[in-house]
Length: 413
Image 1 (tube, rainbow, N blue to C red):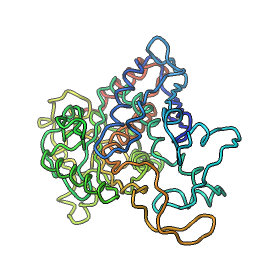
Image 2 (tube, one colour):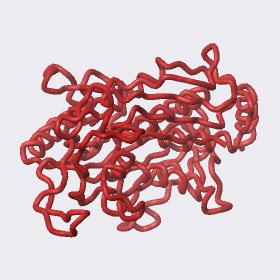
Image 3 (cartoon, helix red, strand yellow):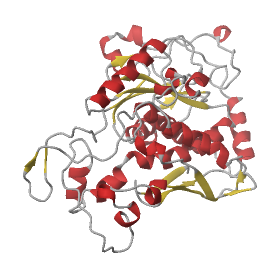
């Protein structure tokens, strides 16, 4: 079974991720993973930490001579901020986050942040310092997820399955872009203050140039106001064969797994497939995706899922009855504004229970939305990889491919 586990804190030494269940024979390199790690770090509205970190996933085990061996793949991502940055009041993180007892004095974090894990976490784990909660609940952990997702993507490439993402809303600025998705446009050098000639589309991962500019202005306004901004991301996976997942049990449905994986991302508060919630206002005749006869199948791409059993529309978002139906899987996710804001909200002190006028602020992003899209890709890729291996098995990639192609031969009329 494909799965991954992560460990590490935001300002600790680094992050560890272990990916288990991959068959042997998958070509993998640190350079390939580094490309996705870099994509997570860019995006308009990111905070100062991204100027410190240069995320790199070092492969420690599970890969030999450029291919997986079938054993768990372990990776290590150093937190440069641990050794080069400074903590509150100029205290270096090496003391603040030391795994050994320390004589260094530091101020405990007790001004609980509304919208963060501080309150529930400190009470659940009986802590008197919110740092013991925020260090793990920080979105920094998502760097490990992206590393795991990159390996999953590499596996899926062997089956012509691709996972991409874009942003459709930031801070109330909505894009209704309906054109062709040229994903390369979102991977160009992004616009920011030090690169005014960069791409505004890439800066916010939005295909609509006019709305991308408005999103950037909205982020600037949020920064000026000491606030943060949320938005909506869309993840698109193409090339899936019909039949990943199952209708047999609730927890084995691919919709269950995909929704849970995307909802697990920091700040995501809602997930929908395809036309999603808009279907509530429509009749069935307007919603359900008509199955086209064989002579109208779309064979343009030549990829499984697009060359057989085509649909007239894709309101279902590529999933029916808990299974993939061959159309692109389309997932929209709502990302709330980041809980750590410059002008902190009124709150309560953990120790006294008394009112304080401003919650704790620690260096943070203004918006997490473009980054969240990249993390969403990773989580979706991991679920699809798991579903592919559940369906086709194989201890070596060649065996998985044989099973896969034999199955494809059985699903046409």
